Length: 449
Image 1: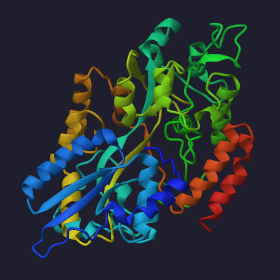
Image 2 (image 1 turned 90 degrees about the horizontal axis):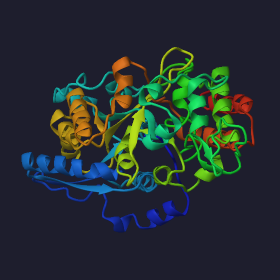
Image 3 (image 1 turned 120 degrees about the vertical axis):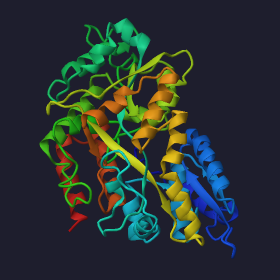
Image 4 (image 1 turned 180 degrees about the horizontal axis):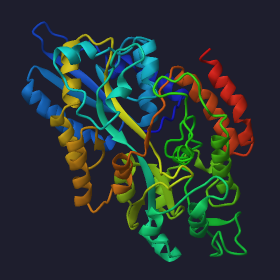
């Protein structure tokens, strides 16, 4: 899922209340091997599925109890960062690829490779490439895959019908950074001003837009742009780093990336996508439901939210085919990490091992809220979505056609995030040009020298 860091007063409040929260990793240790584990996650719609896993786990391990705590995305990372720094926090927590290198550097999470070897846990049962992401450059493994995600367009079917755009046409869109290809033509035609003029019609007023063809989401996308601009950039053949994982040189100064960012910003300038300043504090899904956008590129983790909107019929289209001749999507995945401060390592490992097993992932898949990492569980998720009337093939086509690219994993992720979020905010708000990316790229690469 897209990394969006948040800090400020909330972090201070959370830090002050940390001891009172009852989340100390030392709680529940007993000489008889029993343990009360605390497990944190941030996706509220996934909590019921993992509670089912916890119930089954407790039945098989009656001496271990798992208490699940869920926090919203920003609060989750604020609270976790503060608690880990103080040597407390949950015994096990959901981890993100953009964060785990920093956790390893601070020795805040435990390597699990010895436990994987001792218990003969297979690492080849997951969707291709996912297991390798959690092997650090130090040679140790710090997680097992639990799920994966890709991106696609959620769109308002009535708006598409009114614009004369079919599902098949959307599936065949092409894109290039020079004129935007058939994708931009569709975005322009889907944009409607308050006088009823479409974006590609004479007299269109970009200062008075009623419905934008494409949503700008919740910001600039920071250094990764997962559900924002990354699919376009990667479809040119561009890559984030010199190698992945553990690259040591970023390529934000590449002309293909600069051209992509310039094109992306041009959608705002032309009035086809809402200005960056309107995304602050906004709820893109709610705004989509209110008719402010005809479509939005977003991650599969938000499928339930879009299809749960009242009085809005929604469908999904894949990312466009780019200059490389292929479509693209970032391929991100999560795992579960063991807090290095836990006082019951063995019990925490049992829970982590269970979370990564087919037994738990099949339970999660059957709920139809996320794509588990094990293929058979992925199939169950697809079937569950279909039972709800949701065709998720636009997300899975990337896995089938091998058009995914891995989330970039490097050291210095927090500093890269700070530099590139500031830079991308400036460019997409019109304060800087895409050509200024060279200076920011030099700053980023200086972190690795």
